[in-house]
Image (cartoon, rainbow, N blue to C red; front, side, top):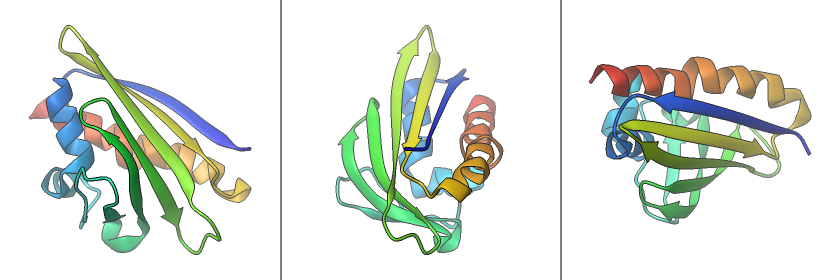
Length: 127
């Protein structure tokens, strides 16, 4: 199974990073919008006006977010897991993304850096 594993150290409190992952207003501000998102299990979300969409399947506030992800017309969802921890005001976000179609792995690997967690990191570190 194809997977993407990335780790980001973000110089911001865990609460601020969490909001940037689950609050549509924050997501719109760092570039993932227009977004529909919240932190409830079962929420059907969409990012980039529906280009990416899915559902929250596990939520442990400020610790873990697991989502079903679709990017286009996929026959089944991939699974994106964000695990957060904080030490001395630095939040570590560990991403594990599994189950995307094989021809999409490279695009998603770069996309996480260039369009999702990279801009999120930049946004919360400035705010």
